[in-house]
Length: 304
Image (cartoon, rainbow, N blue to C red):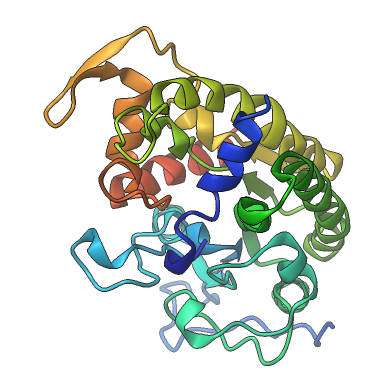
């Protein structure tokens, strides 16, 4: 989800709430330094990341640093803590249809040190990468779907639009995920969802009925978007990380926390204010702490 679409996820949620080729296999690289017993060192293992701006580590311009992809992203944290070399193919702003069918990714939307897509779709690039590194891939993650809802913000029938968007996400994942599974073999694939950033409407003056909208957003994330994503990932034996749950999105709104900025507010609201830029800047992207929380949830899934 790019910064220029900061409402790409939020406004479609409002609409819903209102209605309640493969290359040859590489020869494993060898080190120039010999081990003490004369044997070759172990081959480097890699981690392949696909998705949107959550995967590229995008941060907004008003977050104290220039706007754009960053190494704050959860994928970089996961790679560092798993001793894996990250190959981040994600593209900020990508929809599930674009991941599957749109070649290329503008340089400004790529993750730091991302390979040039060279006219390939994310899916094609991922399949080729997985085959080239066969036997040396330790992890694949996918985070996609948030941008699919963006066009519904201006649709004449926003509810019908959002329903179609969720159906489109599922249809695209139904094509994307089996291709990844075939190329990845038995490598662990982890699918992710998003924090319930809309809980931040509780404290945002941009939403006159913010508290009610925040309450209703819990059902939207849990029972609509996340249920659909989980079902598709499970079809290929992938793990599904419910980032909404991991970031406290399903907690009781009757439990309060004393926030230094907003006073006594529901604990789930306080968490989303800490872990995303939504409460301060109405921006859906995670803070560095938010990416760390997502990374921790992914790492926990890989250890099960």
